[in-house]
Amino acid sequence: MSINVARYRNLKNYKYQLVSDYAISIEIKPRDNVRTRFIDLDAQGLLTIKNGYAWDGPSGLGIDTRSFMRASLVHDALYQLMRAEYLDHNIHQRPADDFLRTICLEDGMGKLRAWFNWMVLRLFGKMSARPVPEPADEIICLP
Image 1 (cartoon, one colour):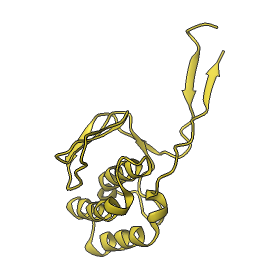
Image 2 (cartoon, one colour):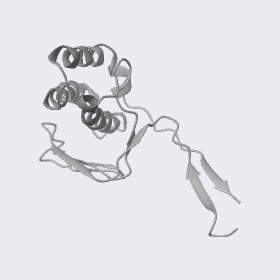
Image 3 (cartoon, one colour):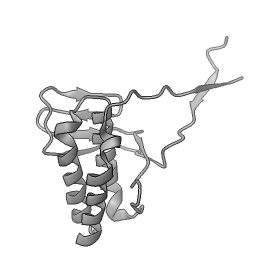
Image 4 (spheres, helix red, strand yellow):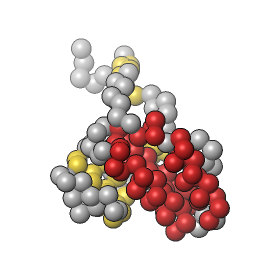
């Protein structure tokens, strides 16, 4: 087999991909530093989402607007850390949901819409924050 085989993944559930690292200070501070391929969160609360990270934008009833994109990026990364059990979903889901609303407001979303999106998360987000094993990606090889 040649080492020049082209391999790729089909990103079925994603719409957006970072083209540079993004860092933000948050109130969620793990006891130990978290380091993954695309997300780092240190014990001081510095969340770094790395170049190449893919996410699906606002979920559910959320609409993909500029005032929601940064919040959806940060929120998706935090929920991913919860699903992978780097963060305890029982402790960190509410602060992650609250921070989404804060970012939405900072980025110009109206108070009513920000509250509505936050409420939807509070009512229906628990399943998305619970730990689940990440499904293995199908690696496709080209001749």
